Length: 196
Image 1 (spheres, rainbow, N blue to C red):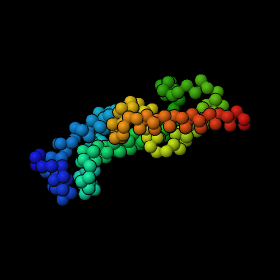
Image 2 (image 1 turned 60 degrees about the vertical axis):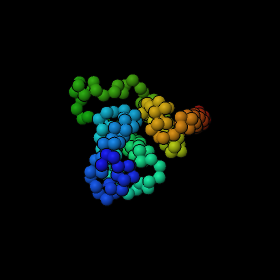
Image 3 (image 1 turned 180 degrees about the vertical axis):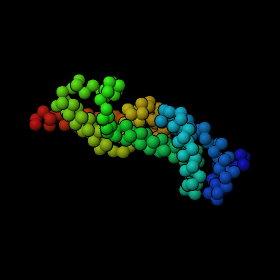
């Protein structure tokens, strides 16, 4: 099986040949795991997601049309899977925390010091944060994706370019556009606040 071409393996996988799938997995699992790790920055998650990517290859083998490289197609699936994973993780992090009912010392030590801000300052900070998230969400999808990978996933430009399969110049351009638009819209919002 290992001497078969990618096209031959995919043809067999589309017909349900598990030996062909094993050969393909052996051929690409390492590259998939590395791509995932570059994006999610967590070895355990990368290994788990690699299994998900390979499962998608197995269940969607008939969707590969033979144009372009199979490796590129699989790595695109890996990139999309990793980005979806990061979005899910981010949504979980943003979920509101319920305050604990107990008021013992251990619980209060773990809670943020709410007394550091006056109530009106805390409300204003929360509102500004909400508005900024809205501005980011309103960016075109391609610019928003680059911005989030750079700032939320703390990826370097080169890593983002590799993860998305784009030239570095395109990534820089999208990031520049996103920053410029956010700065302009934030300045406009601040003017509105000052006037009201």
